Structures are given as C-alpha cells and as structure tokens.
Length: 250
Picture 1 (tube, rainbow, N blue to C red):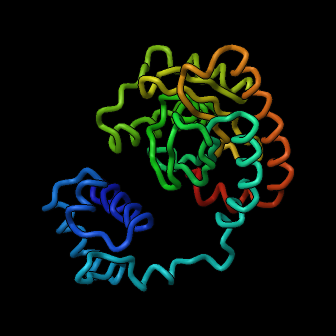
Picture 2: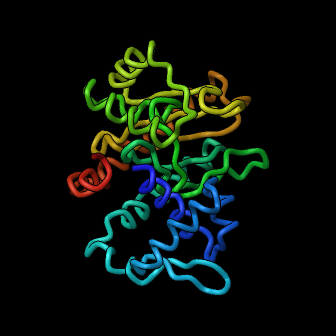
C-alpha cells in the first residue's frame, strides 16, 4: 500500500512539473532518492513515465486511461465560476475537495488575490479526520466507514494527530448542519470553512486563509457564501452523482 501511495505522489509531481529529475522528485514528494529511483524505474518499464536527459515525463500509457467521458474535467468547468465568485466575495482562497481513500484531494482552486493567503494546488492531498474539510468529508459515513477512512489516512500521513476522543461527537454535529469551521487545527495561522455538497457527499467547497481574518462576522459571511454556492452547484450537478461518487467516494 505504501508503494502505491508513493507512486501516486510522484505522478502528482509530474503533473505539475515536467520534466523532473530525481532530486526534484525526491525533494517535492519528500521521499528518499533510492525509493524514487526504484519506483520510477518500475513506472518506466510499464511506459507510465518516460526518462529523458532533462528528467522524467508522464508516459504514453496514461493516455489509455482517459475515460470516454471526462467527468472530472466537466466538474471542474462547472465549479470554476463558482470558485471565482467565492474567492472574489470572500477575499480568501476557494477550493473544491474530494474524499479519496485515506485523504482529501484538492480538485480545483482559485487563489485569494491578497498578498498573505493560503496557497493550494490541484492535486494537493491532506488527511481526513482533522480540519474543516478533513472532518466534514467523513461526517456522513457510518462508524465502520469512518474508522476505515481514518486508518487509511494514518497510513498516508503517519504524523497526523487525530483527536479520537471528541471526533465522533464533532462529526455527528457536522452531519446535521452540513458544514464545518476550523481555526488553526491542522496548521498554525490557518483557518477554513467547508460545506458539503449534498448531491455529492464525497466532495465539499472550502474557503481558507489566515486565521486573523476569520472572525465571527467573517465566518458568518463565508458560511452564507458557501451555502448559496453549494445550492447552485447541486442543481448543476444533477446526473453526475453516480459517476463521480463511483470514482471518488470509495
């Protein structure tokens, strides 16, 4: 399982920077060079990556994995205007997150225009069970499913500190209201607000930024923004639920 997680991290790097040499892959993915070398050699043998004098590139085999209907590209097209609207109205970074096994992944993001802001990139991964989005995305799961998701997130993020003693009560409360807020929980100086997409409960919209700008008035305004955006998005996504959840929720 660790090999699969590491392979995914390296491929994520190549989607953002290509070509990339061993040092760049090692530094960005935070993996030892020897591990990177072994994995990249295996991927090269399967034509998943290609080695060039400048570094590694994504390989031709990946084109065979493109689905006949690119649902996720369509999903990002639908959400991008909403994310721009949220970022402009809030002044903070707006993003779309999906729950995947053991993590939540940023699918799309519009950065805040302010000098001091929360910077995200599509493809970034964060743990479940901590932070607004990390908790919200498992809040609607059963106890067994929650435990399975948390066990997988600890494998991906061995340093994560999950507050198990209070977590179930928090998740049950979030399940009732459909949204969550977090103040410096995952990272010092960072705050966020997330709202679950009812039609796609494996996904949520999030506003994030410096905690100093998340006072009670701002939180209320951000929650209203997300509630309205999710309402519009839920209507636009009618017909996508089964396909998207089949790819991301399990």
